[in-house]
Image 1 (cartoon, rainbow, N blue to C red):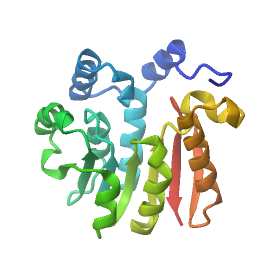
Image 2 (spheres, helix red, strand yellow):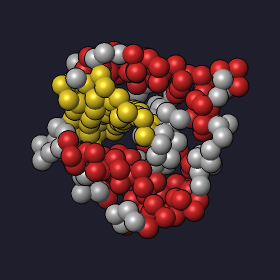
Image 3 (cartoon, one colour):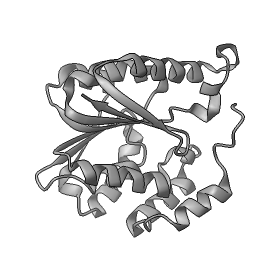
Length: 216
């Protein structure tokens, strides 16, 4: 672990109090996620969700790709910024999750624009010829570098990849021999992206870290 508290409850409460209000459907989904899943900490949550929504609204993307649907919270946030003719493709390898998030997608006014796919992300990226304006990357951390290398050629100029958990509990601040295998994977990913001249990147200390990566 790093020398910072990455889950400061007092700070989180303050950020939520001065942030745009969490939409009712998303609040319901977040609470149901907490109730039903042991790994509920994986849900984006109020503040990060409003951040994702705002970035999407700024870009007004025609095609969003999400890698790692989980319970669909981030999907619904990202969909808020889609252009009128836009679509969001969200990939999840766990079929059981589809049974959960499908109800919330159906309740959303963006339901007709959200296309869930149950498939391994690498195989999907290897076969698709689609391009993306915005990508939210929040899946297997050890595969982040592979996802990134497959994604960059498919990004439109000015398109953005948002990579989640890029501080990995503060482990990126530690020496390599003090990092877990996941911490090492995230450190390698961060260094890999920083050296890639096709993109520009800034890592924000929002929750567990989120990297904004823009294709030049």
